[in-house]
Image: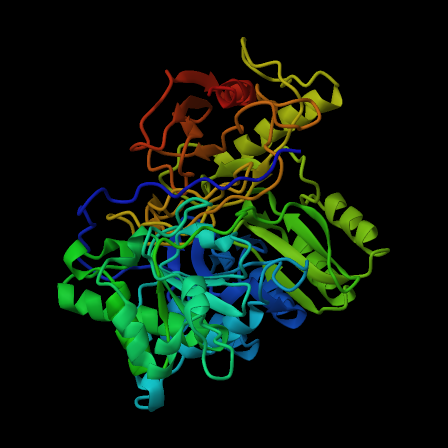
Length: 604
């Protein structure tokens, strides 16, 4: 099996080029519905993707009784209901409040938090960040007009854009790779590194000579009690002033961060968002994301350290935060944990479930013992708490319902926008055509040839490997867009982080975050062995788009399957540099799409 490797976010404005926002963003929420061709659309924020079984059941009833019966999981682990009738907004809101899914009307759209979905379940990572999710969500919804230690400042957070994103990483590196606006990364000593803006640099990046790294500070001196959770020396006794004096005035976008205590981490993340809003006001712009701030008004290590110091939070600057060792999202299958229980990781084809599939997921969430369901930024679901003997049977039920439970599924690595009938701009029913494409690959495997059955002449005769269907996350919004966190779909065969600047599949609005489902790369690709072992480059993610906006497409290099009519597609490989084509395009029918895509995925 090929290892899951994330792709870096792309489409970040070069140099000082930043989007000019002439208005507030128009991301949908639970209270602000978005009109689409198939009815209104509601996006329900679920911080960390964490749902109790009761909340999951309430979501299913909302979808069945008010919407079209299906649920989309978005690129930020939120839930999306489509096909809502006009005038149902009040009932929808009342149901969500009763289920605890709408704790504050004013903060409906700002509760955008992604978290490591296997945190606390598999023995990896340095902390269980579920508690951080709860505390940060409470801070975001804090309306206290005044309060000690800077708490009164948090009331400003209701003015955050609906696409501003927080990421809470338990140290494994999965959500740290998503390019969130504010990122917390748990460290082995019980602390956290706080970053503001952009993805981390690649693994193995060492601090430059002279950098004030917490480990270095720890070796220099200790507090009188012999311990310092910040790894700071004697200057720790100066309180917040020490942190400020150590800080530089450089932008945090280049990988710099601040080391904080674990117990302070959620409040520090909330105050980082307050610092961003301050910089927005000073700049006179309407920036929605940290990376959109003009360079002269960027969030700096020194400015943020001073704000934290004023709130009684000690912080130590860390220059060039090394990326965690692995950024792979959960692969489909059973995940053993240190307590003898297993979690089930499931991917959803194109990020969508039917009413029956969702009922099965919620039933299993209750049966597993944890009474919990976690939606992931890769458009999947994690069900914790299964006994080892019960996990195989549950996975069999899920596979029988059409969900992805193994890392060799041909759905992995395949994505698509909303398409017809939900999007008026789409030229084709791209989801149906993507399903046909995957079915062609499946038939080829069943025939034992490893060849796509309905391919075009010259399609690659390559070994049988598989990748994923999901979505992407954490990105720079498109200057012309308005809706973030779409339920379009992309799944990178290797857990790729996709394009930060894409538009919503059904509205032409921006999708600010997409990430891809992990697991083996999908489809036969030259450079891989029949057993899935690495023999060459990773296969490319595939995205099927209904129009030239290509809403939700992945970043890095990817295969672009663009609808050019009711039954035709133009297939090409696009590169990370400005999404420019790297190969000549080939025009094919929908029936020939699988073969053309298989050939393109072998392009290196």
